[in-house]
Image (tube, rainbow over all chains, first blue to last red; front, side, top):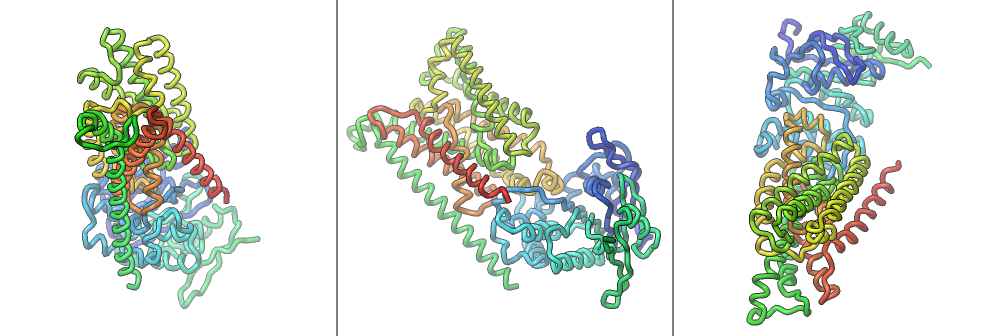
Length: 262
Length: 344
């Protein structure tokens, strides 16, 4: 896998929010077929990194490259076809139907003035089924519970079928079965060749990823597989040793669990 | 698999509901249109042999004009609520209508200074162009000022407050000019009330033209409003140039509001109420919402016009007074419902 050219890379990027520097020269490469979880305490710069990777923020220095090209050299639409950004949902008055929200995931493909075709409709249906949102697809998004709404928004991201997908807190509001379903969806997308990058607060779920990026104070402290002891050590360190990382044998697979030390 | 056919069947049901609403609105417009042709200062009468000149030269253009002006306001409200992601946005509350009023007062005052007598009722083509153009620029300026004051449109209550402040400020300026220039006072007082009484054939043309221009363009860009439901950053991530799209849509709203205000003055709340009524009755995307809101706005102003003419006949109520009362109560109910829903 690692001999593949990176599909997305950041090189020495720094980002300012007002006068505050929130990212200090961060570098990382992301390849297709890999699921990366970005973790770290509050204010570590995880969401900023994800927004930057999505081409939605301009760094004060450093570069972001998508498929070898500077991300701002792609047209907005070309970028959107290749890359899906799933942000933390803002509060909205959603008077449009849930399935229309999912259809927006296909917007980069059929275009602002186009109409969704058969392939788009098939992708919308499949995504709604994948997140088990079909039953309330016709309801207004504003009337759904936060968990149901999250599943609609996730279906929007899935329907895009992009080769690079960025998820900020995708598990938020989801119950355990739907969290599991989501993680399995992310895994299967990575196995099918997508580059999946997600910010996760649930560390046990994050430890199931192929690769962990541990961030704190706008810097990357560790970057590697959860099986590497240095990665796990810096994970515990950035969280002030408030948790212990325990080995786990889960259905025959070696896993790691983050247990809060109380 | 169980869900898929149900979903597509449901979409048909949604489509049918939209068509039913559209048909009901068109029917209401037709009925009210006939009422508009029949409502006279001496009661209802619709006899072609007797009233033909009256109907053709006064009631027909007034009825058509009221419908088009209402449609422009309904469209403006639907655009504003979508662009600013704010259910309380309305051309009147966003400072665009007060901006247009100030511009009109300025044009009238300038006309007075230049020795051109410009009543609102009797305007030649050139000054009329100046009136609509000025109203458009004034509307755009009013919205810009409101947005600057609110530092964007993200916080609904701040935006609303900024709109109120801009409205008061521009209103005061307009008043000041009217005191200084009596020439402007004569025509402008009507604007502060809002009236359909001056709508003649000369008003119908610019109103129809503004609607024919702004509605199709807005509908063509309606998917951008759908995307904005998910938030600005997500809309941006979907490949949309939000800044440019937002400017275009605000310009369309300003064009519609400017044209409506230039002909009917400050008719409040039609832009707020029309999209709400539509959204309450059907689940639609913005493409259909814009069309239905225009229809609903037209029906609302048409109804207000007929009521204003017949309620105290032979005396006539300024239609803006009527919409302000009904719309103001509606806004209060809306705010009450929101505050009842939000604290959880």
